[in-house]
Amino acid sequence: DAGVIQSPRHEVTEMGQEVTLRCKPISGHNSLFWYRQTMMRGLELLIYFNNNVPIDDSGMPEDRFSAKMPNASFSTLKIQPSEPRDSAVYFCASSSTGTIHFFGPGTRLTVL
Amino acid sequence: TQLLEQSPQFLSIQEGENLTVYCNSSSVFSSLQWYRQEPGEGPVLLVTVVTGGEVKKLKRLTFQFGDARKDSSLHITAAQPGDTGLYLCAETSGSRLTFGEGTQLTVNP
Image (cartoon, rainbow over all chains, first blue to last red; front, side, top):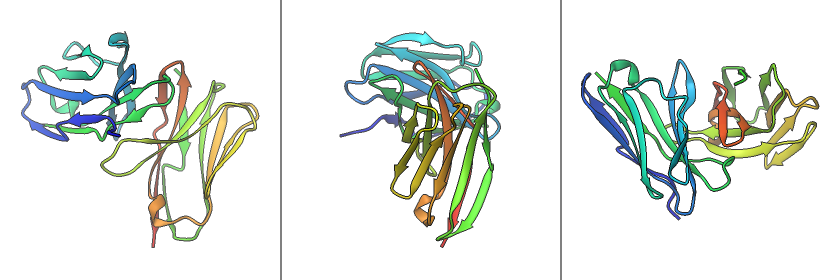
């Protein structure tokens, strides 16, 4: 069975550009999570959805970040405009139980 | 949100050695998970511990949950190069996970 799928795996962009990260959760999972991992701050929860509805976005750093889940099989995390401090690995995870998270391989974002 | 402290931050050992890494908090954990993350991949769940004093074994890995549920340890016996990775503990609160900063383990052949 396919795990969580993320695209792109790597993204290099210039400051000020819009970045869109994509995630396809495991089929049948009703919870989806977006995380960011950096050396300085470790792995942080940005936002999570339950049944496509955003439940907790308290980890979203600022208004430049937005996330959507238009259906059960797709979610996006958008950064507009991007800044160098947004450089990180962004992970998507999904869950059917809420407490057991299955992580995707991540998107490594570099903002120049 | 409680602060999770993991130690040591880095650990480099030779194949065949034993090791223990720790996860501590100033507050009581509702439940605790351990994950391993390999380079270029996402974290993978190893175990969940819920009950104070609980011990779980996964092949050469032994997980302990402190009696007061404020600390946990992961012991690896006869480490192998395939054990190399970032070991993360995470406290669960409903659907939220709060991660420690991890222990980066390198097992040299």
